[in-house]
Every structure is written in structure tokens, then in C-alpha cells.
Length: 242
Image (cartoon, rainbow, N blue to C red; front, side):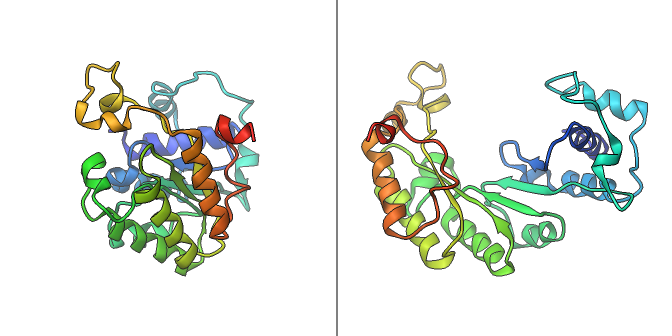
């Protein structure tokens, strides 16, 4: 686990490189909430500039050791304070208490809303009460008037059990919310027959969604009046051939 000061230094470097926001993501960032909160507190406090030791620790795991552009500290500040939007990228399977903490720190929310109210979340992700937890958290940020974009991943064989109830819930409880209906699912790990971890119990997930499934998801979004066209930039090959 990277410590909070190293996280703060990474965020500082990214902002100086020209990043428009700091995207807190990686599996599920919720389990690292304490370190993320501390890092954001450092950025908003006396962390005016990291020292040499901070930079060495932050650069070690950095994917590119070269700056994307020449660091310009003045462009990362507003009224003499470090300034950068914070984005929370999560499956939203977290407690109400975590949501209250994050409300004070996060500028933009990017929740994943993948599973319907059935047992799909338990079977595929081993997460019980996913529907109740995620819809409760989504309703909270909607009521708070937060900036957000909801992402829904269309999965093979799960259009009726997951995509339909997810889109219907959004249309009823979050009308006007921007939604990205994604067609990027690909079988990996336990769902990939070429993987040594492949589990035959997930054979139904060992394929990409069909063109018909993607088109059905888009049609559902249109019929429900969901604002999906702008955010849904990728299209399935079948949809593009229309």
C-alpha cells in the first residue's frame, strides 16, 4: 500500500503535467479511503511542494518516468493554493459513512452501476446486497446535486437481468443523469478459456456481448429517455454498421 504522502506527491506531479483532475481509482479505491483522505488533506494544507525524498518515492512506481510536459507550478494553483478537481471512480459498493466523508472532498463522481437486483452480483462478483447499496449511494449523490456520470457495462447474457433494471432505475430515480452505456466487456481471468484461472462455471461469460445485445441496450436507453448519446463514445461494430 502506497502511503498518503506518496499519493499526494503523485497527484501533485500529475497536476503539474497538465492533468485536469485526479482520478482516484484502482480496483475499488474504497478500501484505501483512509490514505486517500489523508493525501487530499495534504494537498489542501501545507504540502506546498514535495521534497526530494517524496519525489523519489513517487517516481518509482510512475509508469512514465518522463514528464508529459514541463512542470509549471503556477498553473496548478489558484489564489496561491494548490487546485485540482478530485474524481471518485468506484463501483459504489461502500458504506453511507464513507459517502459522507467523500462528499466533503470529491468534485466529480464516476460510479459503476453494473448489476441488476437479482443474484448476478453474488455469482459473478461475490458481493451480496449490491443493488441496495449502489442504488442507495447513487440516490444520495443525486439528492446532493453532485456532478456525476453513471457507467453501465453491458455484459453477455445479462441484458434483461442487469441492463434493463439498471437503466429503468436510472430513468426513474435519476432523470437527466448522463450515462455511459459501455460495450467494452471482454472475457478475462476466470472467464477466459485461455487463462489458467478459467472456471467452466463462467462459460456463459466467455464471450463479448453480441451486436444485438449492444443495440438492445442502446434502444432501451433511448426508449427510457436516458441521456446516453454524448457520454457513450464507443459503439459496437454492429451498431456502427447500421
